[in-house]
Image 1 (cartoon, rainbow, N blue to C red):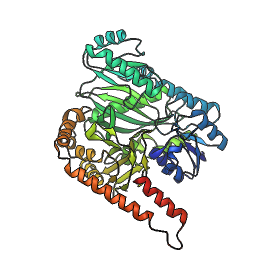
Image 2: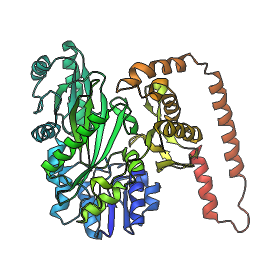
Image 3: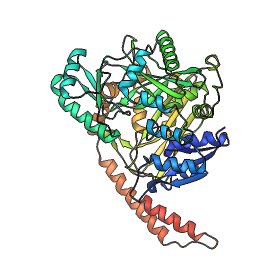
Image 4: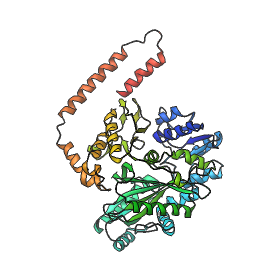
Length: 503
């Protein structure tokens, strides 16, 4: 059994993995940059190691250094998601150095990590595939020929990417060249690989994914599906389980082909198969994520399964602790990704210090977050600051609990997407389950932004001035008040410094 785990990640996902480790009596190890020195995942871990070369170095993409630390202290590595989680070279280096990588083999990561290769492998395994290329595009001319063959609209996608980076939807030929060049540039900046491929764009699709678990002994099970169609800029913002759109027959077929495909490729660990489903319930394989998903919470709440625990058990050489018939699916769950962004300004990032935070709680509410009052949201990292997940016996119950939790969730000092989530959840189309991936752009966002544009900013300006005045008085008062007898000078000056930083 694994006794020590280093999480090659940061923030809420590192903290979430550490919590399961603590339940399993596994020693936890954090890595951090100077920018993250005061982060909760660093404070929570049993051991922590700085990987910054300089004060300005904010990168977690340090595979050699992270591997060296893990090897020296005798720790396995859990990559979380993002960063090194789907880096086949990193997984291979772990294997070559005798360090347990908590995830699938490097060979599987390599096959599924290249999207065109994944399409080819899954087509051979029997999955329906969206029409498109199985090799990266070599030129704009090749993109034009392929688009003409499969018909517009088409989607350009980064070969080695994810999270909406390097994706462009093209509706007509005259827009193709510019979109192709922008996709290549964005893919190069995001993933160090400028290659893109092309596929047919499914009009008004639903983004559905199937969670799977597999062990080294050929056992594969599914953990039902997630609906991930509420997106902005091709990135998910709200997920729910089960899907209000997918029929029982489509669900059964999707589960069957997903499990069989994973058996065919010998998949081991947690993984997710992503599909596009059209209005007629035809589904097409998009890609496979060979890692823990951001939205794994909704699956855990409806199945009672701890995916991190099972990943650790599988990596330790244990068989799956249950068969398919042992998985009891109950109720419905929904997750809101809370971002430090301003929805009224096209979701522009809103970095800064969280001056006040009041977290929601109560029955059937789960919050995965690593923020606190005084925490600084940095521009150097992804702006997602929390994942709020609510469960209910019915979809309506889960939504109402989420609305209540969002009303309780208070964050001051920065802009967040909390008000945006509240408006989505009270939208009649969403409440009826009548939405697809175009929802924010076509049936919600324009009206919402119009209300913002037409609103009178006077009240907000006055409130901001009053806030500035009150904070200035508070700092002056603290600076002129000496500590009383028995107070810790270290604690006193620490509080003073934090107050100044918050200001």
